[in-house]
Length: 407
Ligand code: PMP
Ligand code: GLU
Image 1 (spheres, rainbow, N blue to C red):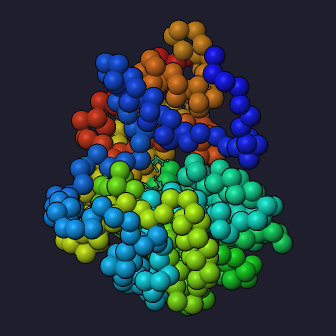
Image 2 (spheres, rainbow, N blue to C red):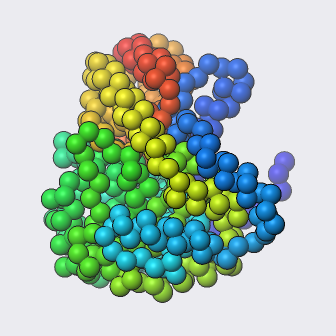
């Protein structure tokens, strides 16, 4: 019997991360010898490019590679990040306005902790990445969820934002391209949002972690680049996990423009200095190599993701009753499987919601997908196509076959 313990009440509303839970469940089954295909993790299957590893290998043999660095990241890395973000967002980001953390997840956590007072509201368009609402709640704030529709390509409108604002609204989270939907905002949509952000005096938390992964004629439009006024209101959250296949290195960063809220970055650095200190020294070396080295690897991985995206969407659409919008960015498909909710499995259980459906799919169908309700979108499931073409073909075939046995 474990020793009884009272856990802090601030954790009461907090759920475990479902993306990580599904991934862990698939990994456990695989370790037990079960042949499961996992579309769970939002993680490139590619290995970190060789030139990035080589830079770390070289640095390891120089003195100092095992030492602490500045809490917010080395100056060399912050300079490289500042240069890149200045160019992408057509603004001026100074190295002092960059904070490097242990993954973009950590960046967001520090950000909500530094920004949110109890009762403050943060607007979060749904479907949303699983961790935003829970992080806001951990900080004592109130996530205000703005529902979007598949038929509108999951874009939140300026009217919705305006209607949701109260005296307590501090910020809106803009995740573009979106995890889980793969939606990419058009320039017109970004411009409309920019207008309401100014009118309602909001900050934009711009989670751009997938900005380099856009396909076809879709284009990433930076809200910070719309005008100096928007640059001043935008907190840039970015990182190398997805673009450079560097999930395990755990480097993400936050930055503001020269005319932006620098005290927020300083406050976040204070939290980091009292909690984790600097992100891993050698992971910073790797990130510097990723940002300053050849970008061919990014183009190659993007091309592979695009081919897989097209194949996965084609196969999903061929399953009767499954509706799938075309994802234009990131590496997820987000089909509507509500036609299968409430149906009966051959084993006799009624699959009442998407969580039960996904549990059954992994147990019986041997295919792991993430329930949409974790993203605030019950009736949908998320599949990551950052996996091999063979896995995509076999895994979606399993999905179709399993769904076909429900009655
Ligand atoms: N934002 C979004 C939208 C994500 O999908 C992820 C994926 N983990 C993150 C932030 C955090 O990324 P990481 O901590 O690996 O840098
Ligand atoms: N962001 C990825 C995902 O959505 C990794 C898991 C996580 O951190 O949530 O699957």
